[in-house]
Image 1 (cartoon, rainbow, N blue to C red):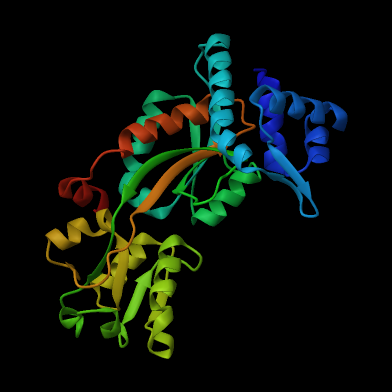
Image 2: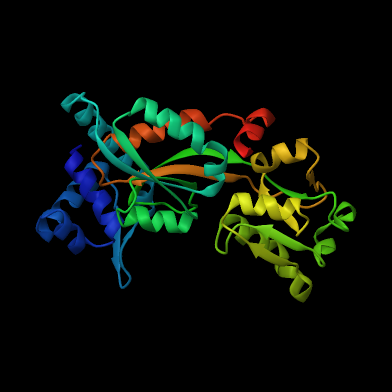
Length: 305
């Protein structure tokens, strides 16, 4: 199987057009079509379907996508490792959602600097949708974000961690200790992440059936601000458990166990498929090794000081 054909497949999938892929790869459109045909003949499947909406992946094409991404990534890694063992210099731009910033950034940056002492790190903390847009525009080299539920043809994506979500309130918040179900939240304010985020979408779906009696949702992209607001009794917060473990242990907050259990929040690291450098993959591997481990209450207390 020719890697060039696989890379052409990934480029067409990412751009959604044979013409656009030909332009980016500096090849004729018949050459692009020939590469895809050769790959389809080798695999004995149809990878793309064309209709009025453009060029779409078939179910078999979607199935091939992660395997093609891995093979191309391995090929690049092999070439990079064999080409030069000298330490890299330069700047790497990394985007990270605030949950992971709050829990892990100090340890991550320390470890990254130890492993790559000649690299300058530019760090951006933002919401997932913004980080994905910046990565797609090549304004970022690596992102640590909430995992997307849909395939991301333009990116290489690997899982980082998964955190349960919980409802918490201050012991001083009036009525919080008497909450038995979501209908008891009518008079309360809910604190969570910005509009469009995975937690926000969960909450809006949860409260949809309540109509006009649904509680108000206040949103904020800053974990530190959300923690301050909930500790000061402004409302009930819906947050990943590791963010509030220290406060619960200290008695500053308590978990409301009577409310619905939400799906865990999954995080991933991602970089552009067309990035030939090995460094984003190495940084991602370090992050995976560090973050893919339970957070103890003691660790959480250290990170939140």
